[in-house]
Amino acid sequence: AKAKVSLETLKSQIEESKTKYPPIDFKARLRKDAAHGVSVVAEVKRASPSKGDIAPGINAGEQGLKYAKAGASAISVLTEPTWFKGDIPDMRSVREEVASLPNRRV
Image (cartoon, rainbow, N blue to C red; front, side, top):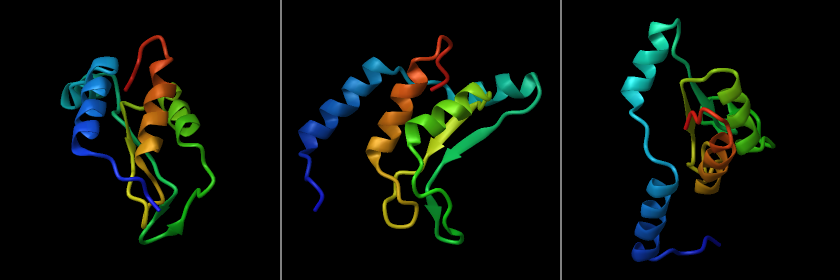
């Protein structure tokens, strides 16, 4: 069973995340990287509705870090549990891992 989170707790978590990890300008990041070649949005997902299981056992944080080190302009983390087998902690895990890089690419 999933734990329920109050609206106030969720709002607090969002504000804390904004402080810890300031948002990036997604469009500007893609344009900047495209000016130097190609912009790539890498996607962390364990499954898809059309393909079924893709990588059911991956550690989302480790995968996101690999993408960032390989030069991804941005990382998309699918958090939908039924079809993509993801969750919100996957997104947090990727942010934590990528934030450790000297030039954070979150």
